[in-house]
Length: 235
Image 1: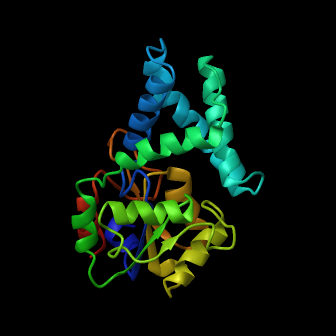
Image 2: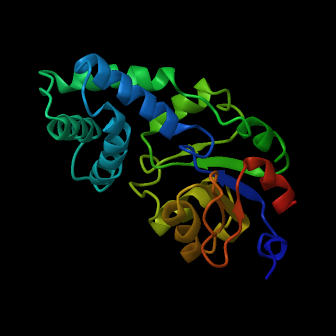
């Protein structure tokens, strides 16, 4: 089946947020490097800090999403793990330390240059955001990058009955929130498991946003390397 045929009948589009509309990785990398530089000036492993922090993010967020710990506790664990890895003293107040990191993170929030135009080109489609982040923070991100009133509801596990991607219930719940059947919705995102292959079990279609453009897409799924390619693909 051609990409055009595979994507016929789409009435709604769900966007992933982090690393799809917003440059999360760039913001998080800059923030944690600045935090470690302030906490431990001249640390010899500063060039490894961003990769170490990124490696801690997924497992600890998954613990929170599974209900194994609070959002605040997973943040403490991430900072504690980074300090242990870097062999630097753990802050006496991990919550305050994370607040310091989070402020640096917020200061670096930015939309990808193709995001606003891509959203504007989807007039006539029902839009929404399906993201695994914390509800309040994800809403704040969209407001900060100027998309808060343009992309429809922000749907996280916190408003979808505790269901996070790639749980099938996250996709069916998100489609229902748009007033559509899953097969009428297209999910666009950068994570192959959560945004591309995961939705298929519910009949929802998906497009992989591979900004680096260095890998082939999973079999049967279209790939784009910029959001500028999205509207022509589904119209």
